[in-house]
Image (cartoon, rainbow, N blue to C red; front, side, top):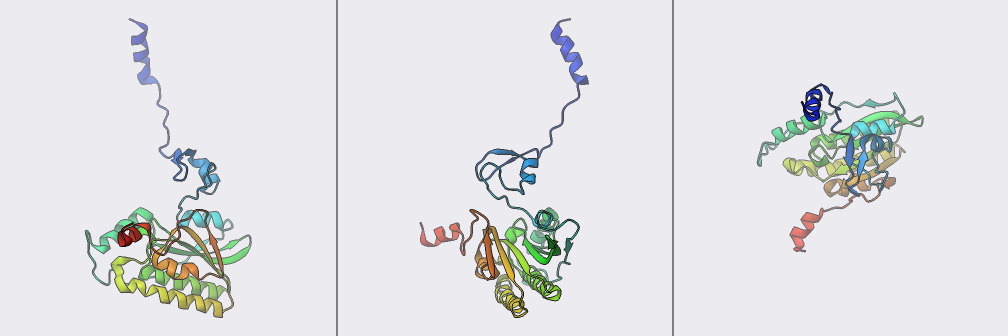
Length: 239
């Protein structure tokens, strides 16, 4: 028997080394491969090009709050699919799919907590949930977040990430723009700061409403911030 046959007989007994599927992450900024653990340790900022990755509420809260201080606010109950909207699929089916994929009820999550010992209420939009779009649930969550901040006498901080108003809710989604503006005025009347952190991307009705009304405005480096997206402009002016 040749040496090759001997090796073949041994190979089935050699245990395979399992490599985790998420061991590497390809940076969307520079295209380089980065160890996922290294990216997590660097707060999801690429160590090679400083590109800020998109992250959801759970990770954002874990990064931001003092350990053990985070307490999420309950998701508000609002009418679902008030317009009985349907395009290629029913709006209710889109909501179910988004909730399954993101393990959240909608695109804005609030939490109470402390940052370096300072108590705050923080809202985080999840772009992974239907593009972070603003509908009844997001508008109600924003108001509830402001009310919680007023109740606790603390600042309200929001991390925006949205493509704009949720088209499946029509005029009801657009009505959340003035609602959020009134809520911010309530915060001002209470003498409390409203802090906005603009993350990639923030545009549309969210940009035209509560995203640009902060007492303090902070933006991620190279974040896409716009009232109208590039494709809408290109289709309108044909350039």
